[in-house]
Image 1 (spheres, rainbow, N blue to C red):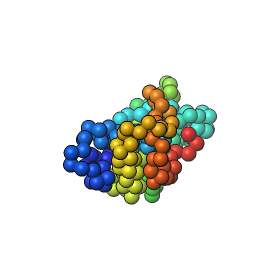
Image 2 (cartoon, one colour; image 1 turned 120 degrees about the vertical axis):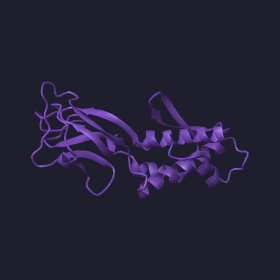
Image 3 (tube, rainbow, N blue to C red; image 1 turned 60 degrees about the vertical axis):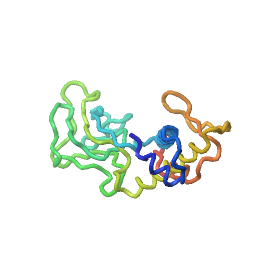
Length: 200
């Protein structure tokens, strides 16, 4: 479900009451897909289990796995952990770890407290299980409202430009090329640049 509603776009863009809701909602979906794809962030919180390698021997990060005996580097932003299972099948209690960085979002690392370490029994590949809510920032975070505003503006722009034949290639997402009309809101582009993952 998109983080922006039809009513929010309609109100901000001052669209008439007879506006095609289906078309606006399609524009919202495209706008959020664009922002997520270009920033490489999960904006709509997602609850799932992700698996990580217990790469303990190398002493350094290889891909996404364990960077040291006590630190797990994540491949997605994490909002909350609901269950954490070590590579040997042991469930780790909440008191055994902290999310980092400590005072800001997004969280991208799980650090074990003193007395705990990452391990595995037979095979280190995808041995560690992290179940939780994945996403860039929580809904009460100031950046969340900024991102929503960026999507509202882009969705309104896409809706108003729905008959435009002048398109820019905006990026490549899984499943194909994502295009938007030329002249997309500068505010949206600035937000994407501000939140985009570095090095991708």
